[in-house]
Amino acid sequence: MKEKGVTLVEIVISIFLIVLFSAILISDFPRILKQFALTRAVYKLAVDLRRIEDLGFSGVLLQDKEGNSLNPKGYGVYFDLANNESQYILYIDRGDSYNAKYDNISQFCQENEDPYKDCILEIIDVKNENPNVFIKQIRDKEGDEIYRPLSVNFTPPIPFVNIVDHEENTYSEVEIVLGLKFYPNVEKSVIVNKGGLIYIKY
Image 1: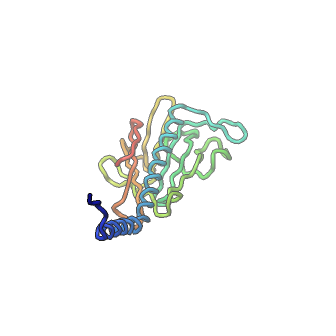
Image 2: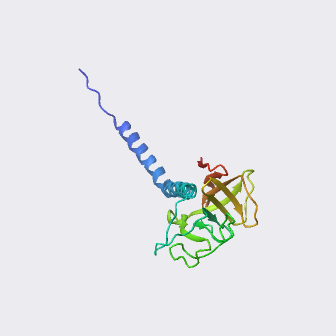
Image 3: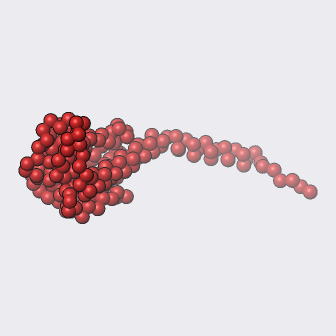
């Protein structure tokens, strides 16, 4: 009975294919890592929007470090791409004249310097995932770019979403687009609308 074996040609072809695929994977590995970082940043943005939405719709009363109520009238997420394309701000909307947008105050809520002004809960930097990740643009429902600072505000007790820029223009829906520097065609985005729907666009 004749036994079958592996020929030298088959071994050489197998080794060649393994080396070829390894070289392709290694050469593309930095881009793959950046795309993973972009995906993580987009998911974090969606989670942060949902977290602020939950606070806004539940009407949770947060307190400062001394136990005083922070008197929230709403909660929101603020974007100002002209001044910082890598950060967004989670804030509490409060004050005598409630306007459902961020008033660009630099105080943090735990400091509670002025209980009648908006305050910052947290500043998120998307570059923490990767230095090449940035907030590329914000678009309205029609796909037009929004250049002005923008607030996405959630107001209790009746669930109300207000999407407004600093010139008082309101939007029914916005798309927040994250991208990678040096890779102009690579982008992922989060969409939020006035109905409170928040989802990632693939």
